[in-house]
Image 1 (tube, helix red, strand yellow):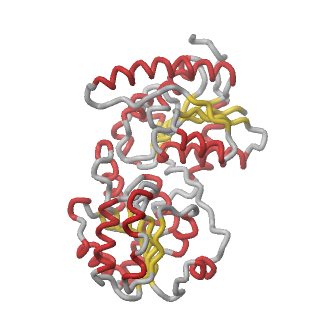
Image 2 (tube, rainbow, N blue to C red):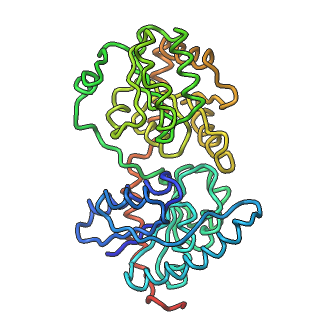
Image 3 (spheres, rainbow, N blue to C red):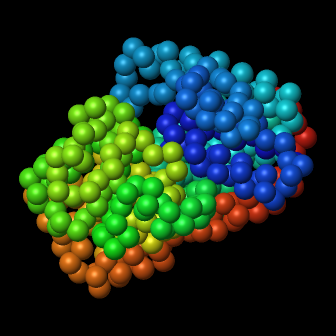
Length: 372
């Protein structure tokens, strides 16, 4: 069976496609899989690093308000549509899947015009413009958050599956991971991450809490600062009483999720799915400039149920962060309740469920080129 996966613009749209591709390979070693992405070098390299072929199309994001760049974006969409049609004709896929971002638009439209079965996967609680438009065309719509359905068309085509993530147990055991960090096996482990790019407000608040001695002394900190702020905080561990490891980026986050007792992070859809899969209590600080404020609504899904604590970026201070962390440390019952509750919201079978549905959908394939 042949699959085309299209996604990009951000890693949050590309990573789910890679997770799906990995699951396809597990289930069908004879499957042929290609990706369609934009010109972003990091995205293309990530796809190829995972052993897949990346086909690049010339496409740029659309803007919600009219700007001069909007004309360039609209023209690029037309060019990208013809590029997508060419790739589809040459590859002859059984199904085409879009995982969001502006890259998905021309690819799914091209597949629709050629009579190839299509599906989209929307990660966030508030769907992006591309997903909203493509929900008119796609034959299946897989959701990471159930409330996203309120903003989409064709409700009868929607399936709430949860987000596809490549969740796996670490190769090292807990004792080894802690030892490699020079951490105490009996101390409380806090993981703070703003993602690969970092989060300045989180970094500033944590730095203040550490340097002012506001955190309980038995807390040890795994701190992913992001590349931009790493130079500012790289030597902080030698100046504070709490044991800490500070890096711009951790290659294998599963190792650190597996030993964490509490996570402080943004509220990107995939990060939340990972946290839920590990059953970790969390303090969520949504990125305030996310499109349609979707990170805030992602976080609300968990906080409204009492399984996470939501702090708006504008309200985050050294004192508030330290107070919340210390309160959770000193309340084991609450910590356990939060962890168990968020675990119950996880979707460990999302990848398998989506692939099963895609395989059934592929059987409805029409003759290529019927509509063009």
